[in-house]
Image (cartoon, helix red, strand yellow):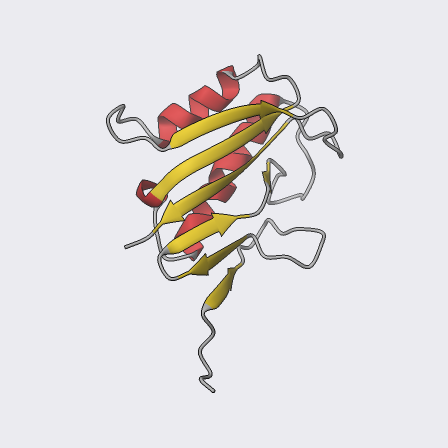
Length: 131
């Protein structure tokens, strides 16, 4: 039996799940994250504004894909859940900062989520393919 595991749990500092699950998981060149919230990494509190939550969420996404050995260029799909799905402006601001090239952006889907806890207004997950 080999000592290397096929599946690798990805963890980042400043953001972790309450439950015993990693921030993401990698098998081969495929990385899939768990839910990423916009908690402040320094205080572990949820900012009140959607803008601050989005900035933190995208920063956590970047840190997670980098901890998996990739970069934001490797993200192929992002799913976003919003408490108010019509309020995508702050998501788009961070989206354009992270993915400025209109010819090289991941797919993205936004969904409503009315049962977010702890003051969360937005959350996401992503899939990345790392060469």
